[in-house]
Amino acid sequence: MKLTFIHAPEDFYDQNYGTKFIPLWAYYLASYAPEGWETEIIDCRLRDIERCGPADVFAFGGINQDLQSMTRAMERLKARYPEAIFLLGGPITWSFEKEGKLDMLRHFDYVFIMDGEETLPMFLERCEQGRLEELDQIIKAPRRFPMEQARPVRFDLMDHEADEYYGTVIEVSRGCPFLCEFCDIRVMPDNNRTHVKDVGLIVQELDGYYKRGVTKFQFACDNFIGDAQWAERCLDAIIEWKERVGANISLFTWLTINVHKMPPVLRKFRLAGFNILFIGIESVNQNSLMETAKVQNIKTLEEAVMTIQSYGFTIAPGFIFGFDSDDENIFRDTLDFIARTGLIGGDPSFLTALAGTPLFDRMKRSGRLIERESGAIARRKITTNIRYLQPVDFLAEGFMGFVHEFCSADFQRKRMMKHFDVAAGGGCFVPNKDSGYASPGHYLLRQFKDLGYLRMAWERVWFLIRPDRFKAVLQMWLRARKLQRSMPGIMTNFYYCVYSWTNIALKYKGLKRDDFALHTVGDDFDVSHLLEGAMLTEKELQRIREEGVKADVQNRYTQKALTELIRKHPGRKIKFTTSKANPASQQTTPFKTR
View 1: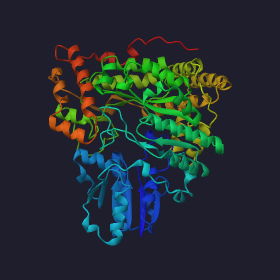
View 2: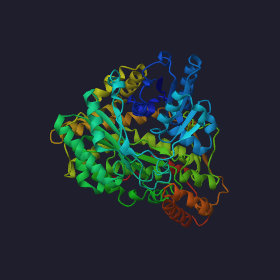
View 3: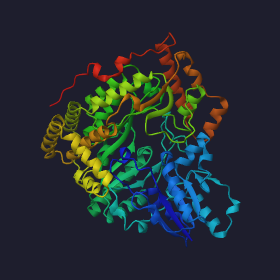
View 4: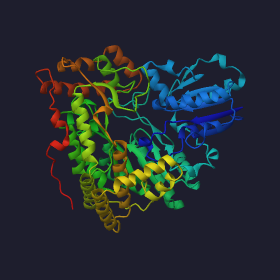
């Protein structure tokens, strides 16, 4: 019998920016196919679905925004192979279950929820035995799969396509011990703690990819340092492997800001080949951080960012606007923070209530959740599913002003120069002689393989040749080249700055007021009622504890922040001056550059 995995994502340029990564989920789950099953993987970004041959089972996986593209691919295959069985799994199914929208997925024969390492082989064995009538259409894993039992990916299936990708993904852990109210990762059953993969298997997979010419890696996880002792063992093993085989690799991963308290670990990250770290900054407003229970970011945020960067890292920060506690100065304060610290990444977004999260529940209880018939957020507009406390005009004008100043040549030059100052002046810089995660040569070569990507690459060049931008890039490059002599690897930071700058410029090119479809509470909204939506019933608390989610702890921080917000507005109304939304109308905090 034959199993074919179909990777059919919505390939939005403003999410991958011209980089394709190996679809890990398919190559990993293929290792769980029972003996005797022929297995194939079709990546619709590389191969037309019409070239897909027959199979007994077609398995799809994706996220919410991929529903339409996966459905189109499924329907084309079903028209050709009506006797085949069509499966759907991935994050989309858990999300739709939490929203009560599983009926939207009923056109797939079977829907898998949660981890598939045990349920997929069980299904395939029943299929082979002709016993599928014993199964419900919705198949949900009874537990989180033990990561220490993970199998290596099917390298034999990628031998002819590995060089088609910019890099690959290696899953190293699942779960996060922190408390963020908006996060849909930690609220999955038993996922509010870290589940780690065997370090030996991680190194084995690194070696397997490296032998196939892959040198750019994303270490997929919810928080790499969720188990700090395991993280250090993993870094030690990678360093030892690199030295043993002479590997030249570049690594990227996700973690939390508290890594700044771990100097030996920061040094090992650099020695292992990490260039860029995604860290959720979320907000520069202290009460907003308290509101979302991002407790690790409170008080030491600026110091932490500069400490991490002093080792040579580029931080890819997450910024979110629209927290209840965000005040009139949030856009201005965020720009000033970026400038003061020398952050050279950043793609801001608006707060969204993801299904299953405490934020989703709080918005629903307080009547501020906008429930859509569709399971995906429309991408033609900047829209979310929350009624914000801030006026729509304030949010829209503030965001447009933020993007305008962020993308200016002067702002980019100043933040890059500050970044260089931090890296050069901290006394902690660890040279990194690897090729660099954001190296332009490797990236540009892949743009020529896709006409759409090539067109966008040309738009980047066209954006940068305007005299003021070209001058800024030249000044940044000259400074980086000078520092490169004593700080090997610093050129990668310059490349990433230009990459990040042009990403935002292309993503929001022509952004106008009509592009925002945001919502706000009515004029009669009473701020003193905010706490009512944050109250948990005893029944809810019991369910949360049974699922291993620390939502009751998070809720205490959220209530504390909302109490402070209410105290600041005794008149029961929050008033915003729309003119203050535009950062250009406010005085910039001074900062020095060379």
